[in-house]
Image (tube, rainbow, N blue to C red; front, side, top):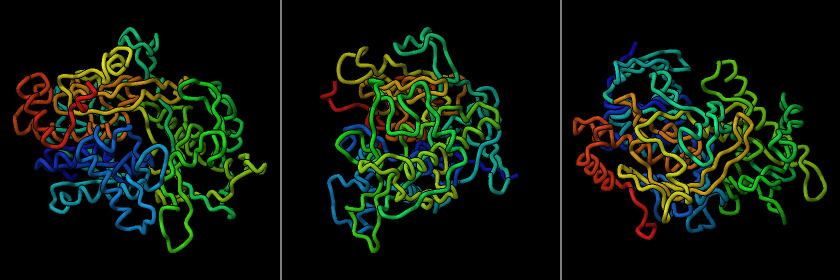
Length: 518
């Protein structure tokens, strides 16, 4: 069995894992990254979720390397495409969700390019199609991770002074016997205004299987009727104002019946533009190309069962049914959706299987909004970010802050049948204590598995924040090795903490919002 020794082992090659690797390598460490799919990048690549960002992202509110990533995405289009409409800032898809809606394959290219200098020298090893299967630990110390290539079934062992769990669902936590939380906490435990009276570990947000569509009017690209179409066509959850396969959903804030449309009309929210990643009007192309959009809509959220901490048969069933939901929504759009002209269906919607290079045309992995969460040295609660609990324009000003971010508390329907919770959150800070487990000395949380609650996960789960978290993990490992100090000591020792924060600022981290926010 192969044995690898590195300075840090990163399990999970999503956005946080890539940022952690970039930071660790830039600081001279030898790094191993394992990724369960064949694409690095997580949310922005294999899951098909373009960056969902705050209103100030073009000016401030992220790390320098995240801004570099965004600029490289734009530069890729400007360099390789014949762009005839160069908006400022350039938005490849002119999608509504972000000022940089783009093809996941471009993000994959950019992330690979950013990491390539370290790959070429052997400093960074990336193993795709690879999962952790067991963990060895000695007291508070993780000593090694056994991994398996899911294509070849070969196994190996990786050891290092430090490990980072950057998986999408906190998969390393149960393997390493790290204490963690799932679902919703009780109000008595967190004192959060919107917490449940009784904790419910199964109250976990919906996940989504994204797919990509090109619109080619006048053509017929209707897919074969999905096996579960009859089920999903009749599905009408009690929290929904109409059949699930319809142009109606609860408004996330008011819960009132909200109308959607496919394309822009006089009334209704245009779903097509929401996550459009290719706006054909901006490009000159040798052949006639259609607009391309990603289906990650209210009607494609799957909340009939979870895919972690459940029996394998349940996981497989829920993954299958989630895929069937997305395909059924597409089939409904192609064949039965009401059009403004009185007709039915948009057969010109073409499933772009090439977008994710998958046989079924769906993303390589589901978009998981809510992960297992470590029992951390510090747990971020609703009061930390709520405008009702803080004076001024920002959330709690942590002494151990290692970054900033902003997003509303946006909870999608849950596995227990609860509807949306979408409430205001102030621009926030990221505390170092939320990245450090209470019971493990050399493992860090580098993704959505940090010490949030079910509620605050809703605003700490987006791409710029995940990048900041991962990058901070990589920087912290380098700092700890250089100073022969554990992460907890860095947080608790005033001199070490100040030195580390200065180190982060020099490396392009923003630890505070502009002065007008305070």
